[in-house]
Structures are given as C-alpha cells and as structure tokens.
Amino acid sequence: TLIYFITPTYPRREQIAELTRLGQTLMHVSRLYWIVADDRPDCSLQIMNLLPDFSIPYTYIASPMPAIYKRDPDAMPRGVSNRRAALNWIRLNHNINDSNAVIYFGDDDNTFHLDLFKEIRTTKKISMFPVGLVGEYGVSSPIIDKGKVVGFFDSWPAKRKFPVDMAGFAINVQLLFKYPYATMPYKAGFEEDRFLSALAIRLDEIEPKAENCTKILVWHTQTAKKPKPIVMVKSKASLPGSLATLL
Ligand code: UGA
Ligand code: MN
Image (cartoon, rainbow, N blue to C red):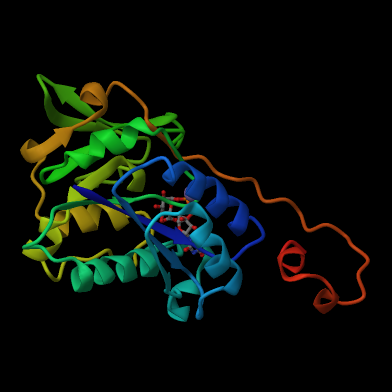
C-alpha cells in the first residue's frame, strides 16, 4: 500500500528549512508519494531544485489561496487550497482498480515519528491517533473504550462531530472515489470536521492506531518566526537566490 503524503506549504523565510527537514524524514519511508502543494501562483525554482534531493517520488503543485479568503487574517483557511489541489491530483492520477493507497495530511512544520507510517499504512477506511502539542491540553486524541473510539479529547471541541487535528487521521484512497465531490471547506477551524463529515465517517468505523491511541507519533510543532534582520545590502538582486529569500 502506497502512502500519499500531502504537504501544504507557503512562501516565507522558513519554507526551505521546513521542507528540507520534512524531506529528510520522508526519505526513510518506503512506498511514499509526496505531494507538495505550495500557496503561490507559480512553482518556485528553488523548491523545484530542492525536491529531487530526497530521492522520493513527488509532485509539486502551485495552489494559491483565493484572494477572497485572505481578507480576514485571523480566519484564513490555511492550507486548504493546497490540500484541495492535492486531493484533485489524486482523483485524477490514482488508478483505484490497480492499487491501494492511504492519504495523510502532513503540514510542513509538524514532526513525524517513523513508526507513524507503519501505523497509517494499514488504514482500511479511516484511522485516528493522538497528536502532541495541540492547543491548551497539549494533546488531541480520540478516547478509546474496548478498542473503539467513543469520544474525543481536544481543547477546542467547538461543537464539532470530529474534534481532531489535521495530523490526527488518515484515510484510505477508496473513500475519495466513493465520495467524488467530498472536499475540504474554506472555513478556518472546521476543515477536518467538515471533510470527515463529507466522507460520511461513522464513529464506530474509526480504526484506532498507535497502540489504541496511547502513543504520540506526531507533533503539531510550530516554528517561531524571527523578526526580520536589519541588513545593509544595496539591493536584494545582488544576492544569490537562496540568500535573498532569507531577508
Ligand atoms: C493548524 C492546523 O493543523 C492546520 O491543518 C490548519 O490548516 C490551520 O491550523 C488553520 O486552519 O489555520 P497551524 O500550525 O496553526 O495549523 O497553521 P500553519 O502550520 O501555519 O498552517 C497549516 C498548513 O498550511 C501548513 O502546512 C502551512 O505551510 C500551510 N499554509 C499556511 C499555507 O499554505 N498558506 C498560508 O497562508 C499559511
Ligand atoms: Mn503548523
């Protein structure tokens, strides 16, 4: 079974560092296909040059967020246009009759234990597992009773049916084809819940992973943004490309 690892990313000073770290994690995983979906109008030459370094099969997509969603920076649906583009790519390119695959959303700033990939690879329909460093509680996880998901532990329930983090579930690719119109909404905070609802997921069919959700194999880490350094350069154009992006 193949793993489609969908990574939304966006231009900022930390981007190349994040993708390098993530790519060097994914290098250790066999049968993985990396879909890097970038929130910009055109593909970046620098990233096109970087991705082959990891020797893993990948597709690089430019998938900018529509301007209309950028009006309110506090309610921006981050990574949604990217994930939608990646899901479309899978629907167009995966041969459902030919092979099986599992889909996972791996943000560019998260941290992944290699055991996570062994766990999600066996996802028959939908699997869930704890995510560390999420919200006030410090962990977001399904609650398990006798091997079944009976509820959720999450610091922001917000009346969601599935109060889970984007990094806390994996789905079998068959679901995408069973529900060809299911997608992720442009609604900050409700991306996971509405996406899983669109796939008609029932609580009793969720497959708990990571030793019945007792182990943390993925962390919602965040990279601190540094203030822009004050530098004395006559013009950015005089710097080599990779240096110019850091300023
Ligand atoms: C949390 C969730 O884990 C995300 O899945 C969710 O999309 C996001 O909140 C949200 O809805 O705001 P968080 O760590 O707070 O994630 O957000 P980021 O890591 O900044 O963004 C999530 C993903 O979207 C990242 O992979 C990031 O590279 C990408 N992103 C972010 C964009 O593509 N465009 C942006 O303008 C910002
Ligand atoms: Mn993040």
